[in-house]
Amino acid sequence: MRLVLTILLCAFWAIASVAEDYDVSPNVRLGWLLFYDPILSGNRNISCATCHHPKFGTSDGVSLSLGEGGLGLGPDRIIDPTNPPEQRIPRNAPALFNLGALGFTSMFHDGRLEEDINKPNMIRTPLGEDMALGFHSILSAQAMFPVLSGDEMAGHYSENDVSEQVRLGNLSQTGGAWDLIAARVAEIPEYRQAFDQVIGAETDIHFTHISDAIADFIVFEWRADNSLFDQFMRQEVDFTDIQLYGMSLFYGEAGCGQCHRGTFQTDQEFHAIAMPQFGPGKAARFENHFRDIGRMRVTGQIDDAYAFRTPSLRNIVATAPYGHSGAFATLEGIVRHHLDPIQSLYSYERSQAILPELPGVNDWAIMDDPDELAAIAKANSLERRLLTDDQVDAIVAFLSTLTDQQSLDGRLGIPPSVPSGLPIDQ
Image (cartoon, rainbow, N blue to C red; front, side, top):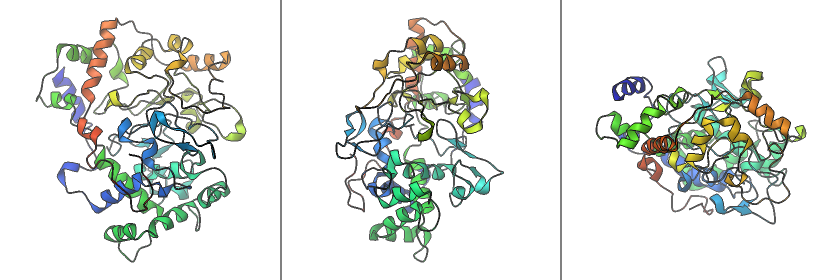
């Protein structure tokens, strides 16, 4: 088993930057500070770390986040009574581990941002071709989405200069949202001096410089490739009997390895697995429904209905809740869902969802609609499998070997302060 897996994994093992091979670059340190600095949000109150915090495995520990209009961190985040959220973030905040690896050629649960050799800068984005220019990678381009989302970081319509430009559709244009964010950063002497080392004092700071720095930081900080599993594959350690049994099930009888394959336990493809859906759905406000059709919203292909990307399983023990909707609070719960997705969908226990209180919203419209449930079930592509409780326990034991403690701790950690002087999420 080990020899076969080693041969398979070596073909996939490639990562954009190797933290151990060089001193921390000025751009990585810049990205470190910018990632935790609320200066990038419209109301200067939310940072990237608010929803991607190391305390919660680079996510936020809830099923669907509260972005703009929330106060606090993780499951303790509450609404701001003076400016409450308009809705929850429609999908679970994904973990950030290994996103610099060469195998990650698309971003988000539906892959709507992806590498495409036929597009400008080899990046395809739903925001238009001009929005793909200037980024050094798709990971860098990913950073533009939260700052341009009113629910995530930009702020409610017209309540600040950034959200006003977002509402008007002025994004990358001169004087648009990108320019406003970049100007804020440039006005802070410590940031300007730091960027001088990267782009030169004569070059204006652009939003793409900011996003490039954040991407470099993510690659450095959350590279996860030294788990017990990796050490086992290098023949440095042995597994326990239950871990060995779990691995044999994972790559064998249980069929997990059919989709969760390769170095990072993901085929990077999209599959419908009858995941329970709740929250506002992923649709334009005027469409007035709670549905999330996943990959189909990107491709327009009916075969992609309710399909979502196979997530990497690195550090999976620390990244609950699970699924694109964060439907399952425990690792055992999501494993059992895979065994009989349709039955799990119809018998879903709603108390598993970790949803910060948000009065006035209808979180369960899809789950209360028999026709919607039937559509989700019909799209399911997983076969039913029968495993014993002991076999499920063994798979969970194997999944625990994918934990890389250094990446969970972070190489730089949380900065004590940021150049803007704004409070940061500790």
